[in-house]
Length: 313
Image (cartoon, rainbow, N blue to C red; front, side, top):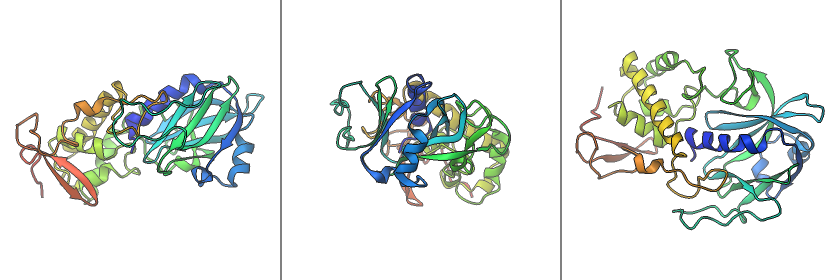
């Protein structure tokens, strides 16, 4: 599943190509991709066709565009998107079909022709395709509400308004308005395993399995350490490690283990080459040389070093 760095790569790719553009047509090929849309396809088309895209923002793994009417007035709605497990937002060259999967990619690539579920046609002739092999992602509209803390709603947002559908999602660690000490205190009030808490999008958003393992390895903390066993200093250290590893991933386009995640140009990210823990079961820890282990904890794989990340009770 694309995590925060991968979704931010997509957002940055969308901004220069969509901002200021008007949606001229919504081409729906599979209605399952808009299953969260109140009122169905007719409502989606009514909200989008003729609307201009005035901002593209992100909180955690959620993306959205702000919408304006033909006179430039805000419509009070946003077009929300989530990539799910395998969603891709890909640009097709005007007048040409989407490109075939890259031969250089590894893994089960989404086919940009067969798995194209919805396309937005823009007034410059470009076509933005939502490609999703597994259909866990989607697009839908949502009314705007005020962020609870009154700060800028998200990365890329012009004000404190955000879609109602994302109002329950916590701020992420790349958000300038994120309060790391408060998030650390929230971690410390829970008895759940620290990795479970990092994956809880209502505590801190955007962190998935990959970056949770990497952050915990960097902070020398085992995945099953209870939140209540953390000191404030240790909890802050974990959050700062998570932010640092995601910033490094962002610099190289995110993490691609297979071709299910690519950017808007169909290119993969390269951070998988720099991972210290995730996916390295049986390989030596780069810090101490002990062989890394993988366990299944609460239905998810966790990768850790048994020497650097000792059990805490």
